[in-house]
Image 1 (cartoon, rainbow, N blue to C red):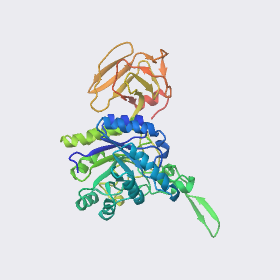
Image 2: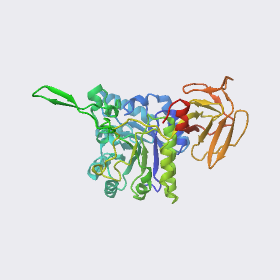
Image 3: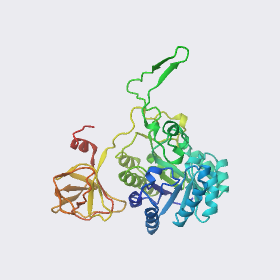
Image 4: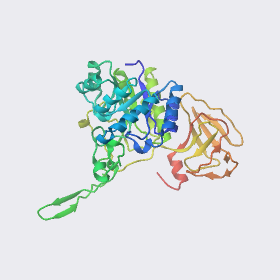
Length: 432
């Protein structure tokens, strides 16, 4: 294993790729929609923008792993061959695949590109790991249900095999994502990239007596709810020290190609700090958790890496599907850092926090457009004037408005402006 574990972040499109890298990722994963397990999000990447993303990452000395991780029909094998060949031309740093047949196909078509085995392959033990290693797999993204002890056991048998674990993001109700519920109810096949997330819905439970023909609805228990398959989100930030201390994990992976640019930036930065602080002997779980709590989530669980599934009783969210985090995104700064675009209602006089990419700094200014100040180690922007680059002025600007608003000074690319959730809800006339 490398001395320093890799941080791997999701890239659902070119913008999120650049954000993830700017906020601390060593590598990103994603692809065009073809044969990816995120067909809908993958459409934000076409071949041209994906090639640009790979080139951009490589210019920073960072990596891109291409997802070709759906399971093939017989009729698709020729299409898979063509797609793998096209991906190989872009020179990604690895191909992520799920099927043993596609492992073999990728090794034949693109022998110079490392193969990473998707978590969809459900590897839980050294025997299975050895089979895939013998097929030429360089890295295995282990099953989400695996324990850290089992990772240690695999590494003891195959020390040259890289191991990657998920540390944050949505959890699937089914075993390592091998689900058929969506295919059964809507015809959208989860293992071919079009999951309808049926596990996130509330369900009504009925009992039927065949002898009498009677059917009646079972009443839900008060305050419990009927989101009976809705898993909480994984959050392993408090265990990063334990994971890294094991010495057997090569890459820490964040789930979320379909999630927002804010998620891509803030979650990546939190885990960047957790990893760096561990190696510096300054690990502080509360600091990373405070940032992760700013994102929308389904409630958090530390999942199964450090605890067996049967030992857990807090992994399901029966009463809701999603909840607000502690903060709301107000705006996202442009790539050139000169303007911002509204994500939540903002008015003259508002004071918003500036969230910066890793290592970035801010110039403190006070001019007609706004004031930037530093308070207790955080940067804040007070809006004095809301004017677009075309000269249009606003008293307030609302989410969805596509005008690019002038900043009082140039900020780092893709800096984020945010406010507390209570303030955001108050501006909307709502309460938490």
